[in-house]
Length: 230
Image (cartoon, rainbow, N blue to C red; front, side, top):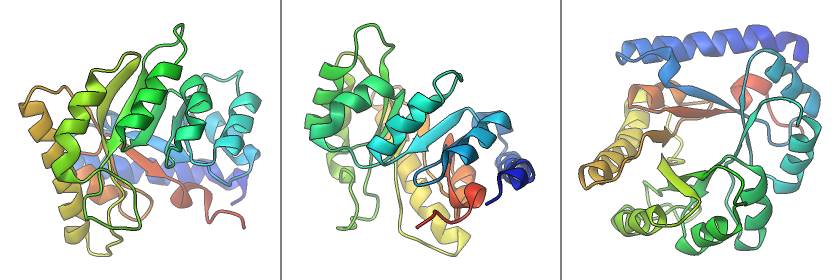
């Protein structure tokens, strides 16, 4: 991807997001574009920030820390979207505003204990394994209520919502079915007393289906930046 092409690409993606939101009776402002920059060169992220992108998602910790340092003069919001290893929670707790893939209480407890006191609460989403895939992380739906209750009690964390990486589907109806499952789980938790406002779901191949089912954050990499460099 040439950074000179990025403004046009971003415009088209935002238009697609707005159309999907309008079709669902929602405003375009109800969905945040989270630009996934893992393995992408810093100049592309800088160009995206120049185009008004304010939220960036990273999965590789050391690469992310280097980018955060390089772009520290900009008012950007950084989201850690990769699987969280217990031995790497301290720098995540110190340098990110959001963590999207918490699926174990031990990890949440470490993030809470290591979040700096001077920082605002760390926004957390619980990853749910909506299809029971052994190759993916995430809490089982049946175990979600207990985990959500435990995480909600931790200090210096703000439990905001749920996240999923569903099976790859090509049919929009099948895509929507997985996202509807996550939305229903969020709604069940809220009925029971939670106050979750976030659904982090939808990536480059299925974000329109996710928006149709209530996504508030879509995690977009390839559709913005092209294939990741090898």
